[in-house]
Amino acid sequence: MVAKELIGKIIKQENIDTIDGNKIPKTFVINVPDPYKSYYSRFTDVDKPVAVIFVTKTPNSFEKILRVTEKINKQYNLELSGAKCEVTIKSRKLNGVRVRGINRFTEVEQVQQYYKDEGFEFSRSETFTNTEAIIRINRFFIIDELDKGIYKSEIEEDVFYVELPKFISWEEFKRITIEVKNNLTDTNYDVAKGILYVNGGITEIVRIVKPKATVEMLKAIQQKYLDRL
Image (cartoon, rainbow, N blue to C red):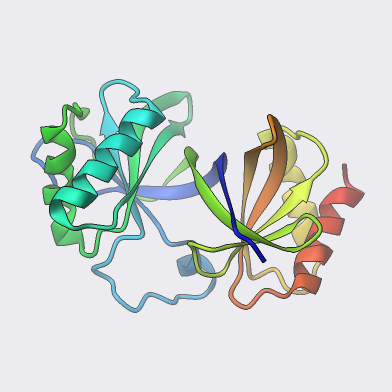
């Protein structure tokens, strides 16, 4: 198999918290939880963040975020992954930089400072816990095709994608996902909606997080969505 590198977007619903320490004072930083926590309780290192969002005063282009992240990685010998993101909380929309690859929560402030040194301006601090949000992330994907329309991530453990034939709205996706889970025996997986930019067009996908997911299980999930489209 030859891995494909693509650009796309993931849309997911999460209950998020703010980071109230280990950050530049009076700035706005969000902690994005591990999807495993809800389903598998597989935390082995509670001091390691899965992803954080540095909330910025204004939107920053995906290109700028990629260039700055690459510069930071080279200059400080890090392996950060930066992405453009938007967080919607009720009617509010927040812009930010989603960063993965920070090894400890105690390192968040230093990484944030690296982005500040490159001209990123952060929003003023807010505090909340367990708040429902919709997160939209523009990012790179590196995937292998396991079967027709079934893919495995090469850069994230236990992450898979299945194709859908057409666009569905976020509200439709939520409704159909509930129906799909109600019609499967194994519901211990996390899902998100997404798109891939492929050959000048858009491919609709469902992202599935499931340790040791089989092709048969992924096909079964995919078919349940197809049956409802």
